[in-house]
Image 1: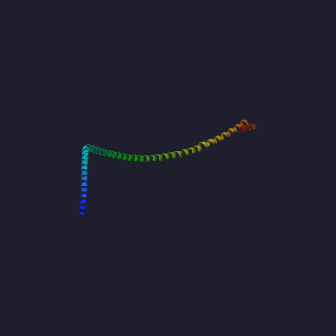
Image 2: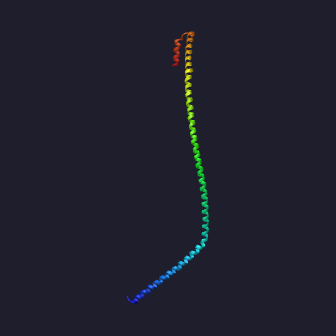
Amino acid sequence: MDQQTLLTVMTAFVIIAAIALLIQAAMLVGMYKASRALQQNVQRLTPKIESVLETSRQTIEDGRKHLADISAKTSDILETTRQQVHRIDEFMDDATSRARVQFDRAEMVLDDAMGRTQRTLALVERGILTPIVQVQGVAAGLKSAINVLLRGRPNPEKAHSDEEMFI
């Protein structure tokens, strides 16, 4: 390549580089203007953001206080509930053991009463009912004997008709 061509090529490259630099400078100016517009928008929104931020901080702080209060109250309630459940458990254990003892006593009294009742019934049967049955048998024999002595022997025909009526 000769010098003239080389110089022309170099000039073309310098021109292209200059154009690229001008384009970059124009883009930087555009970016500068955009950033300034963005900065102005942000500056306009900054007071609103700060007020919302302050309100949010206050709300969060109030929420933390309420949460701490609720947590403390919940802990107190849970502790009280645990104590009451423990007391109820002790009471139920005591009541159950007392009821068991009373049921055992009632069972012993009932068994004793049933035994005494059975012994009493056996004594009544042996001491009263058996002699009554024997006396009744003797009385029935005496009655039959007196009937035979006073009226004579019964008529067999009459006995036969009574049997027929019975059958």
